Image (cartoon, rainbow, N blue to C red; front, side, top):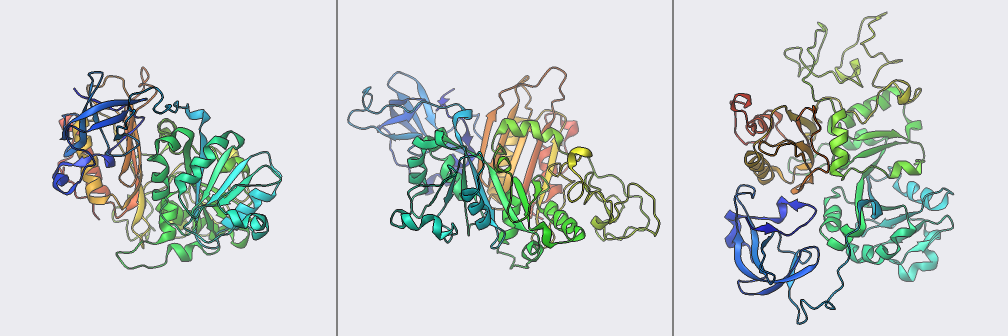
Length: 523
């Protein structure tokens, strides 16, 4: 079998659809001399275009097959300079270009992407970071999508060089990037050891995917930086108005999209709402993204360590965290007074960590002593946020409720699992069809996978839109560990029944497959 270029991740989005061959214009032709990134740039010759092999996802091909000068036959998974480039006149010479050594993950500078609707408190957070005395060295970068929000007093002396780093008294730094984001990070990489974190504010950009892809598609940046996660600030006083703002069917609610993309959500300005209003805010956010960690704040005062350490784009971290997710079927509702219109069989969802009647829209009788009922003064929707610490009770906001959907936007989150191994070809086909149909509506995806005929090898993946990264996990399935495949989807107008049926069709054991194996994916 032809080898592929040894990259850390292979992206489905980088490969080419066989059906689109006539529409794709490749940079090279058969016989062209090229250099391939095989850990070091290695010279070879293009021998085939639109190359396919059985291990590829269904309907996909690689742009090139290359015969290296050392005799190896490889393929390039993408037609990009970071993977394959034209051979220069001195190609193959040791002095041609010194290869950048690959850095271990722990030496890469983490990047936290910050989003939030206008007025959520991002400016206050940035100025707090730059002014307050703390033990973290944070580099704040504002990209070109938004207006400058960093306090003018902080940058007035450097107005002639807006893209230069301005070092603050507390050791932090800031700059406003109005040009090439890759260039800005390229200039920062030699100073990465001076900082603990890069905080990248994306004011005015609802979808952080373009920023994330800019970084992850550049080898040098990925070798010096790593995406730590997406953090969203919300204004508790006004967020419900933004989330419930009706939009035309073909337009996206920016506030909903920001919440959906986030790994950690800071509930800011909690002092401006009541406990009951805060509970509704949390419930609404959970209906959009039940996998994000919630954290309360006032005046954007956030512990510095909460801005980092998300590790949300670490596939191995997800492998560990998904074990905490509640993937069980909804418990049967036995409440005769239930008025939930969506509950036709009294089998609607009761979330473990926020089990309260506010979720179902009904009240219990006066004097009710049922401990399972969430009352205004002591319900799980509130428990441990305003008066108690989660550590006292063993609950955590990052543990999701069972899947719900935000009615007005159609955005929701879901988790699927299989207790039997999957067929890799069927799963590749499942993901390919899903991306073809719903790439723009599939905001985030993650999974831990067990494939038949792979023994104890464990596979993990995560994605933003169509940019899906698969890799073999660093650790195998442990002896006695249940080999359960688990996947998480966050997106818009995803049909759970269709997704579940199509996912079940990937099971290696035919008796475990669903009768409905269609790939519709639409609500």
